Amino acid sequence: MPIQYYIYLCLTLFCIGIVGVLTRRNAIIVFMCIELMLNAVNLLLVAFSKMHHAVQVAADAKNVSAGTDGQLFVFFIMVVAAAEVSVGLAIIVMMYRNTHSVDINFLNRLKN
Image (cartoon, rainbow, N blue to C red):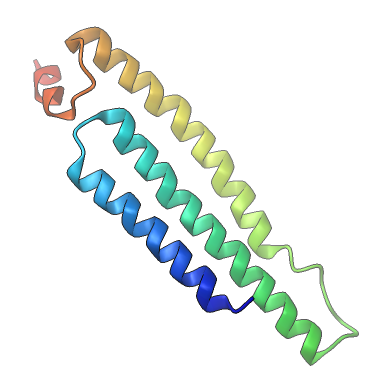
């Protein structure tokens, strides 16, 4: 499958995430859109890793690594995303306890 298909898919997913972050008020939906953007980047990293591995195989079949560079980056991004989820959900729960809403416009009330 050509790399352009992956690029178009990832660009579409990333743009959907950006539109969701900029237009939504619900903190949970904004959080899900951020995760969608991270997953679009992860998919693109894996696609580029696959493409780079195929180019290496075609150029020199003797000294070929496994092509796991992109997969390692994706693994570390997923670890950071898991930490982000735990902290983000804790913030959303505390925001709900204080304001009884998950509307991000109520964040100004938390300053007092």
